[in-house]
Length: 109
Length: 113
Image (cartoon, rainbow over all chains, first blue to last red):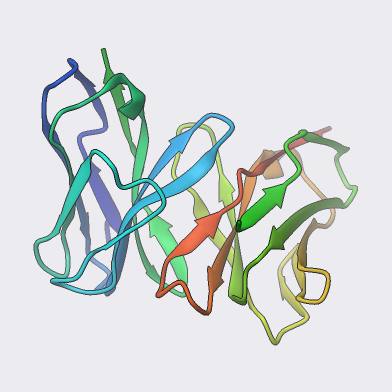
């Protein structure tokens, strides 16, 4: 039982490049989330999906897009990366308590 | 504006003592509150959930209280051990948040032998 799996674990991008962070969960949860974590700022919600086919903006959605491909997968896309998007990104799925992936460490140079 | 506040200063505590962490919130109508543990380089791990109509929850050496009048939750680690050293996060799900939950910035706990 893998839980929540994120790929990649590390990524370096140049300003203006695009990429997609992948997330998959095998716990049959309806709710899935994308957070970013920056030093001193805690976890901030980027996007949320209550169920397959639905998404909602969180606290910091600018510069990101998401796709809830099916019940298992929820991807996060950076269309044109900026240095301000350097962060650690966590995907989570939830029923009651949330289960988090191991995170993606993204550096934009 | 809505805020969730945790003590940003690290809590240094001796092994065997009780560590008590605070989570305060403003301008929320809470449905329930959660506590997580996060180790360096890892994702948060869910520990406990307490609903707005519950006063106290326990799990092994962990105890959580929730006072909606004071807008505060307390998280206790009794008989603390060096392995309890980590950052502890509180998260709040509100009645009007449509399933979204917000995190505090976390408090680091350091347990020394």
